Amino acid sequence: MLGLRPTTAEAVVPVDGPLTALEAVRAVEAELGHVLDTTMRRAFDVDEVFAQDVAGRVTAFVRRGGKRLRSAFAWCGWRAAGGSGDPTALLRTAAALELVQACALIHDDVMDGSPVRRGAPAVHVELAHMHRAARMTGSPEAFSTAVAILAGDLALVWADDVLTETALGSPYGTRLFHEWQAMRTEMVAGQYRDIHAQAAGSSGVDEAVGIATLKSALYTVERPLALGASLAGGDEHTLSALRSAGRCAGLAFQLRDDLLGTYGDPNLTGKPADDDLRTRKLTYLLAVGLWLADAAGDEEAADALGPLTDGAGGRTDDAVDRMREALRRTGARDVVESKISELAATSVRHFAGATDDPVVRREFTTLVERASGVALGPTGEAA
Image 1 (spheres, rainbow, N blue to C red):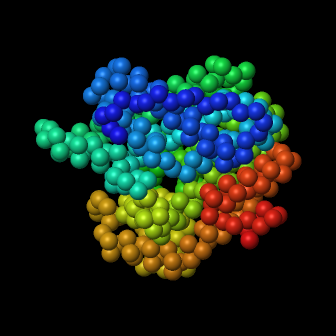
Image 2 (cartoon, rainbow, N blue to C red):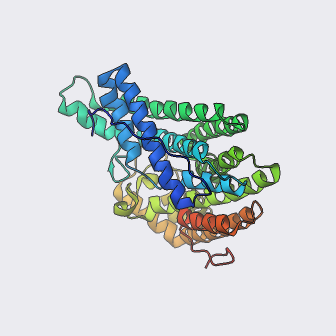
Image 3 (tube, rainbow, N blue to C red):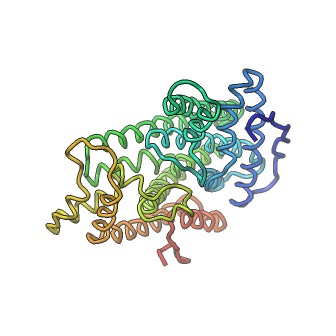
């Protein structure tokens, strides 16, 4: 698809009446396609080489999909606050969320040196292949890192453009912008704390929770819910319930991601299953494992999970295996599973305080189940 000028896409036709979550996500895909076609035309107008090499890769990455959870949670917030009728502003806000997610993932893969994303080579890996295939001069790694940073920046620029245009056309544009403004700063703060903790060899449970909240919980669930509710003019009571629900669901999502990053099948997750351990990221799973090891006097597990003291880089395969075994033996994996179930159930209870619409509550529960990997019964408790 790279190198081809985009075809014209039809704008999303406003829909009368409330959409279901699934219909909303499908409509977001259509709106996102329209946004990408428009931005690609503008990119070709600026410069054809830039459009093919950078904008085209961002577009291809976004089109490759993802869970689209942020879009669905934005819909839940909109409906919980009474949103109905023409959903165009919601769809465009959700499209902006998917673009800012692309920025975060492209940059994250560069920082972590991750080779795979969404079941395909990460953007910086693709760019290194392009450098070698074209027999360019200089270092492929330096080139690919620099251009991947630009690609992530471009995704953020596109996201801001879409959100700004939407806010300018909405009677609740100021509220929408303030939520967006806070979300972007939280994302950067969370990413920095993640890098800082890794470099410092941090191990604390509270710090791990703080990083998970900033880096993932807020912008994955809490802010999308609030963005949707803001577009519907939601009151403070509704927004407060949604924020509490989103914080819990977002943490459950991140803790599940921590487990998948340690024990998941790369063929199913679309990303490696040992990056977090190899680089010793401060996840809640790791912090709990160290706490349990210290409490039990398990020096072998504590040594396996503790920070390296010789300034070495990534850990060997044997060291990663020792970390997995230590997490299993200390019971950390079971503790994290229990915490995920608790957070998922608490999230659903908080959401019930935002709306009495049984359809929206049921669909929010389904989304929480999908994000957390926890089956919730009819009462919202873990089954």
